[in-house]
Image (tube, rainbow, N blue to C red; front, side):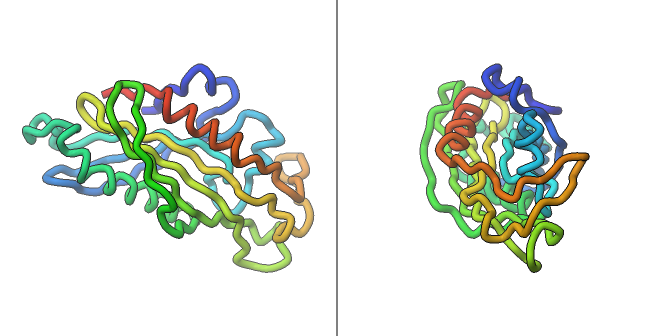
Length: 211
């Protein structure tokens, strides 16, 4: 189920697709449905295209379900959070790697207060984003990128949200423009990490997942 974006982002971002991953934590199996969002602006979408179906500039929400439920196991999400948060981050990293990205490690871990008042963990990851060989002078070219994923306990489960953003414009690796969907792919990305981080933070601090 796609989680509704906050009103501040709903007009400028749209759902691109959903990926489902499964893992286990404690005594339960965990299903994480990750919905990827792309900018609605056509130029921004074209500039984000590469060798992955996840755009280099994107947002994520994750619907997390447990089987059996945490309540059936006699656990509250808050009490299970310490063990569940690293596992949730690991599952997110697996999702990115399955889509062709490289995750180089966790740069920073922050504490924050979610909209429901719960204390959560916010992970900032160093990542490499693959550039399509059709756009480069060679193979295996990568853009420096940054991924964010935040995890916090809800009443019955956990909330997860985050985003991906480029840290370089690609001028060193992109070798011209390609026609995509009737348009020209710019030779360089418009890069504004601070603005992108504010967008990701807006999502994390205002989204209200069910459960």
